[in-house]
Image 1 (cartoon, helix red, strand yellow):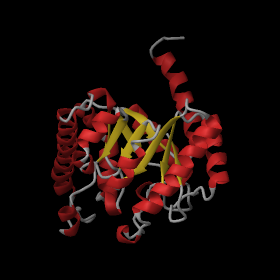
Image 2 (cartoon, one colour; image 1 turned 120 degrees about the vertical axis):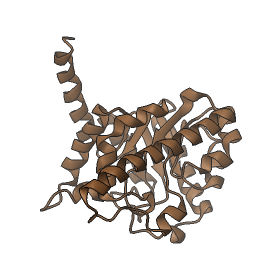
Image 3 (tube, helix red, strand yellow; image 1 turned 90 degrees about the vertical axis):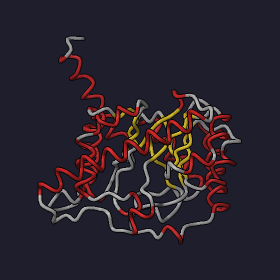
Length: 280
């Protein structure tokens, strides 16, 4: 899944202007992207979520991009819209898009009937309850190893429970189970996870298979990965490395900025796996 960001607030290579959008979309598809994820709202930790563009501006940017990409690349390319605004999501459902990537998974419950009726794929991302963030519930990095060993498994279990609950409510509203995708919501800031929590969650990603829906993972250019390195900015290399780990741990969709580099690395892993299983 190639990421196309439409606003200058985006922290990595935003596509500003329709020509830039089309160039980026074409490049990503040629590089191996099977899905394009279009978003007009930045949610990186440095952004104040109350100062983002309004839903009308978001919708205008998204619709312009969708229309142009469809005209340029045709209807075979799988398009996803990344948003947490209910009004934007409901309007986009009226168009010929294939997936809604809902940044705040709980929002999907309020519009479950519409999502189910649309027939589109829906990805629900874990987004912590505001009370969790306001209470400073993220573990202090200085906590001892024993407290981490107790807290992190509980935290992952709670995230899995949240995603399972939301999925069940959507299915009860009429959504087909095979149209649901889950996203654990890697990241700090609005995503509500500490660096160590994110790393623990990546290592234990197979636990999310218990939700019984395909796993989408967004690790590309995340700050908690860059902070693993003591010198320089090797965010490309570590983004690709973490994507490989996620794929090997059960992720079915990798949401990335660097499509070619990630796709090439995945091809190598797939080739090597043939030798492991004697499928030459």
